[in-house]
Image (cartoon, rainbow, N blue to C red):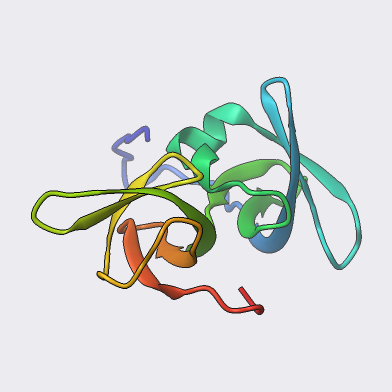
Length: 134
């Protein structure tokens, strides 16, 4: 983020930004390819905009992109939640699950390896068991 102070007589050009729901398709080199489900247009997103959210990009997951009026991607908004599979469980003060996406979350005692669970991507918290709709 770049910050600049402007004098009261300086003008700033308006930028129109739109938000589009997209579906993740695949990674190709240093680009992530998404599709707009309404228009079926492919949108290439530079890896630099994905930052630390790559682990949440599972094929078919929905996310959001913010684009300028020329269709250039400005920001990537990861999905709020993802469905993952528990690969293993660890001990400690609580029950820690290692997930197939490479992250760990604390889970309730009834969760077992192989279970599909829903995880909050912002706080890396267990939200519940996955259903067929997740």
